[in-house]
Length: 109
Image (cartoon, rainbow, N blue to C red):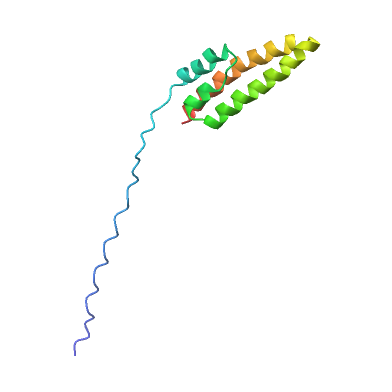
């Protein structure tokens, strides 16, 4: 009587891990270009284009239409003479803050 156990078959090899395939090449965006796209149109009261370039379309549209809403309120305040102070202050704040945020958005992607 042979008490030898039958040989245990080797485990099957693990299936290959599928590799992720990226069909879309996402080039790196330049923070300087994003800042310029905020400043140059910003001279004409249009902000948000640099954010759209950076890939934040919703943020860009929010800034664009939000600034226009603030500009409309400041236009109405021109008749009370306070708008002559608040409108330039809002424009200067947008010219400083918006390009900085757009340039930083390029770094985080």
